[in-house]
Amino acid sequence: MPKDDLMEHASSTVDFYALLGVEFESSSSDIRRAYRKTALKYHPDKLGAAFDPEKFHLLQVANDVLSDPTAKAAYDNARYARLQKVRQEQLFEGRRRQMKEELEAREKGGVGAGIQVGGKRPREEEDEMGTEIRRLAEEGKRRRREMEEKIRAQGGSAPSFAEPSASTPPPKRPADITPKPAAPTKPEPAQTAAEEAEEEDEVARLERRIREIAEAKEKRKADKRARKSGVYVPADTPSASPAGDWKARLKEKGIHDQKDTSTPVKRPDLNGLKAGEKPLSSPKFSFSPKPRLVPQAKDEFAATMDRLKDAEKKRLEEEIRRKEADSPL
Image (cartoon, one colour):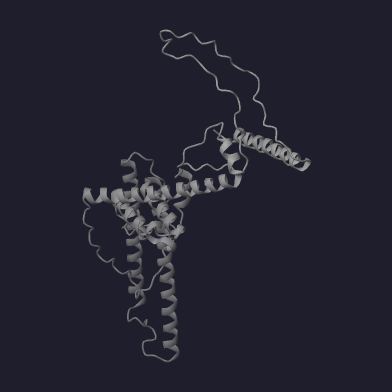
């Protein structure tokens, strides 16, 4: 995929890691292995009528973006910014909910009017919120540094990421909403070389099957066009000679050729003259055209029918010769 298209797809809001079923820290080999497994799962030969071309194309885009170091760094940066925005919105929503509950408690004349419903003082809440925000900021800086070092080690140019401004006050968050610790993921067992080769053979077989189906479809279309043109010659039958057996075609039309009435030519014996024999005279060859068989018309109607048959025969011969001349060799 071109570099410009990769950078354009890097700004996508789709979670490519969840789509391929890999983690943020997965290596390039793990991403490639996960792509092969997922592609086999959504392949058209396996799904048939339920095949989703958009889903299959999105898998290819995810593999291309996460396999390119520069595009992966840009995608990770945009993804981290989106996650931060979602967390801030959750914090603000929780703060509004807590303020509403506190206001309702005050209206009802609750004893703890000066204390938040959660049971913690505002000062303690602000301290915990500031600590969590600082932790998130440090985690983001650490990830950016690791990504830049990884790209620099691979020989690519590290993208520049803008550091958060120190003058911007960090957003506040209530104490009752704390980020849930990520569930520990079980390390995926390393795939053997035999399994990888088997998966690659399966992918190659499926791709070869798709090409064969496409070629058979094109061949059927070409045969159909040839039949419509009237000069169709099947590929599995021996091709006709350029001259063609036009006499056989005339016989199919019901028109028989005239018999040869010329006198056969005699020639001396090839083994020479025998003793006591006189040499034969030299053979006579006739170069005159063969006499046409003139129909013995008993009446005028029979002569007219014979002439019509001769004319029809000539017309069919000309038509057959013209078709044979126009047909490809």
